[in-house]
Length: 330
Image (cartoon, rainbow, N blue to C red; front, side, top):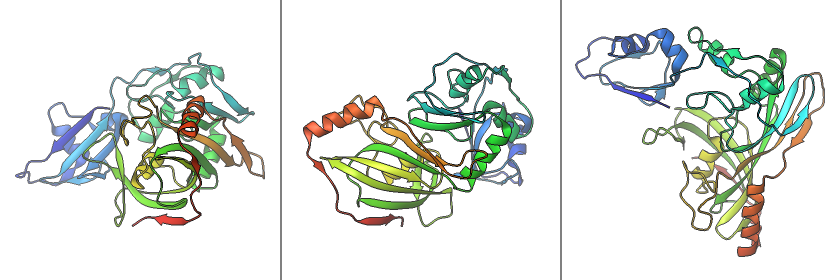
């Protein structure tokens, strides 16, 4: 994703809106283009609005995208359907599939596949207007997302009413999402409650980092349980209470257990040099529209997990950590 990095000169004497300042720059963007193309705006490392005031010495980072297509087209891509009714389609997403079109990934996404599967027409894209409307046009049916290299359960909505109904469950944290991951290292306790803020890592703009004792960023909470250890590796179950970008990957790194195969937050592994991200959305518990009771859905364990675990079981004895719970925040 392209990044515009701007530092206001020390002799800048005005105090104007961020969008107005960017519009004055050579090759700058006007407000309409900013709203259509900007994915994230940071002012001195913190999330900012177009109306935020800037002054001398401030640093602006604009994460933006270009070459937005006229339409999001249906594509005949095979999907692994776990459950379906008149309102929802629940999919076991394969690793490597992007959830919705965005910069660098305008085709081959789950949205493209769903449009074809549901028999829908191409979706025209907005390039001007309200940010919410622009993003909504790119994400028809998408209630939540999974990273490209995270596999597993994702629920999609066939109509706007269902999308809003499920969106409220996510917003109010009324559902449960559980993941499996294989990590490098052993956690500090057999189970833990990780509570931090998550902010973008300004030293590496691809990454985020967990921080505490600050109100910066967004609050994130993950509850983990170590199922078993194999030498220096661990199989961990994680329930997320919030849904921040890269949350589990950031939190596992925060407790000293980066996920195996994570090229952004981890390091190459000697035993598994070709491992891909070992993170899988395993289970989801939620209420479907029109139902009073919660439903449980599960995704099968992917083959890449089975292969890694087979090697670990042959190489190391299986160990169960003593039951100790720890709150992982500072």
